Image (cartoon, rainbow, N blue to C red; front, side, top):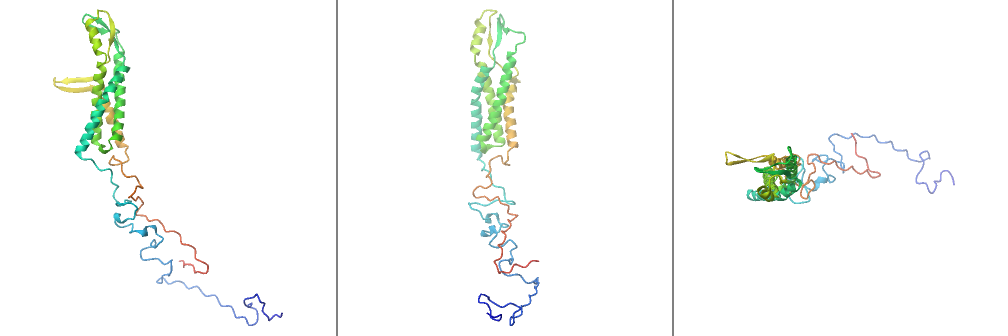
Length: 305
């Protein structure tokens, strides 16, 4: 085979071979005109750099428009940054709220019965001696009356705190001033019932011994309050005082702390983020579009600059 005969597997001639065409000079790059917009999928639209099928919010209306037009899966309006706060549980009618509050006060007052029984079981009896004029303490300075007051104070304070917790979680629809008033009145009613129930346990036997026992006999006096009770002002106005008010005080403090630490401004549970029918995505900052795919082989890359 001679040098002028091309090989079978060669598709062309070498540039140095005789008769081969001269190589074409490389074309100089042409700077794109500012007024000319590139065509194709890289061309920006009039709606902005994020417009196009790759933007996730283009399936519905613009995120900068009406809140009701924001696309979401569930029924009802969507909410996000700059839109109204999701509604809390609707308020109850005044009549129903009053009935719930009255029921809470009554339930707490009835619970004063077991509270009084527990106090009577824990508080010790005070030893006394029978004398012609009645009964006197068997010891000069007995500690039993102080212990009875202490037990009542501790039990009443704990009862008030538990009552506030129970009303906070069970009566969620009346949280606020109505719930606070319910807790305070219910705890005070329970304290009155507990005091009267506890002091009457064993009181009949004490009165009988006080009338029939011979002088010098020792027996026990049931627990009673010395640091609290009810005084009559002007003979007609009852005014409670002392540790009889501790259950109501504990309920008021506990309920106020629960309201202060609540994460809901309305104190009632509100829809959690991500609930059906609500959109908590930021409507003011759109998500960036997905990165474009690399150009196919042979396709001109988009101009830069």
